[in-house]
Each structure stands twice: as C-alpha cells, then as structure tokens.
Image 1 (cartoon, one colour):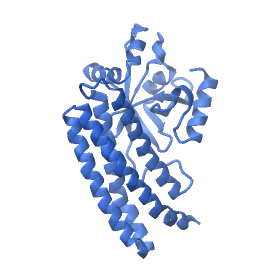
Image 2: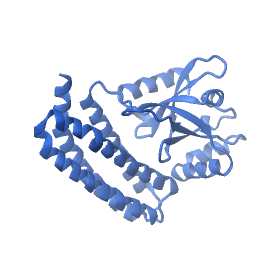
Image 3: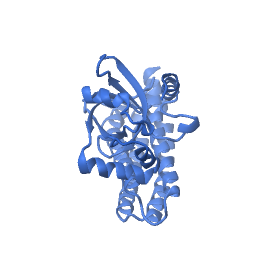
Image 4: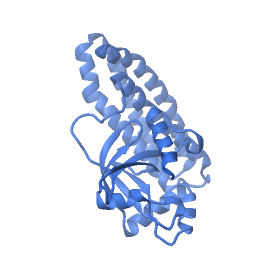
Length: 280
C-alpha cells in the first residue's frame, strides 16, 4: 500500500482502538512494526491477521499477489523481534516463518475463510509466506492502550463484543454444511481469551477492589458466579465446535453473546465507578 494510504489507516486505527471504516470495516487488522533490514529504521504497516489460538497470530505476506515479498517480510527475516498493536493491546512478538506442511495447512485455513488469499497466490509465482507472531510473555498485566483503568476495561470488553459479532457474521456466511477449520480456531481462541480475562479479574482485579471497597463484596460474588456461567457456555461452544456443526456452533455463539453482553454491562456498571474513583 502507498505510504500516505498506510499512514491514514495507522492514524485511524490508533485513534479508534483498532476500528476502521471504508473497505477495512469489520476486518481483523493489526499494526506490525518491524526493523528495517538495511536501515535499522522502525516501520509500521497495517496487515490483516488470523487468530491462531494461544499466544500467536498469523499474518500472510501476500502483497496483493505482487511478484515481490512485502518490505515488512524482508525486515522480519532480518530482525524477527517485532511490535504488534491490536488497537487495544500492544506487545512484543517473535516472528517465525512457517515452513512446509505447517505453512500449507495454515494457508489452506486462510483460503477456506477468505478465497481472496487463493486469488493472490494465483497472481504470483512465489509461494506466499505465512508468518506466526508469537507474543513474548512478560510479567504483569497486559499493556492496554487506554488512559485510565476504567477505559481499559471498556476497551477489553469491546474486543469481546466485536469478536463475537465477527464470529456471528462469519457463521452466517458459511456454506451451511460444515464448520470451517479457521472458524473453529477463531471460536476456540475466543473461548481461551474469555477464560484468561476472567481468570485475571478473579485472581487480581477483584481482590484489589474488595480490599479498597468493602461494599463491592456482593457485586464480586455475582460477577464470579457469572464468570462460572460464561465458562460453562464457552465449554458448550467448544463441544459444538468439535462436532463441526455450524448450526450447533451458531446456537452456542448466540447464547454466549446474550449472556456475555448482560455480564459485561453489569460488570461495567459495578467496576467503572470504582476504577475511576481510584484515579480521580
């Protein structure tokens, strides 16, 4: 993409915490910052990504089917340590180029989810690389691009709301006979993300708030019960995904959406005043 076009996307992405308008509205995008192979200068590029479970995401060096690999790919070959911005989270990652069967399987999943990837491959003689970005673990809570703890909670909640909306749309676009491999990975990644978020709240955030605000006790009990309920629902979604039945998966996604939306609304109602008071 031309530099000016890229820069406009980067500015909109950062200003709206990962939300984009126009042709990229609703797309899974991230900002990838690499170190120049020859210059050592840092370069930021908007790229599409695929959730891949655990601590990694996949990016594809398609360059729209160009005969040449994109500059960011050459950069990470020389300097695999990169920075990833999701719009809400920012973290350091190690870039690993997938090889052989692992690359082919990942690319096939991408094509199944979006045939446009196959069109790019048909336009070029090069084998389009697939790169895994492995988050480099660090102590403490994740780095959230927010100005206050309350805003951080809202933004994290919006990540789950947005992802569920994307999953529902992707299920609606499916062929109706089976659940695609990449969509299965996306559902499982969502389930794991909810588990990690709620585990962090139960273990760290809620005890801190309870120590400072004794009146939070009853709300905490309800929130913990709701976390247990969400865990039951994500378990049902995992089971539905394992059957590869899109109708069963969609039913579970709708159930999860309804109950999670109610939970997030109640949690924001209870937590945000306490979190904002702490920084007032």
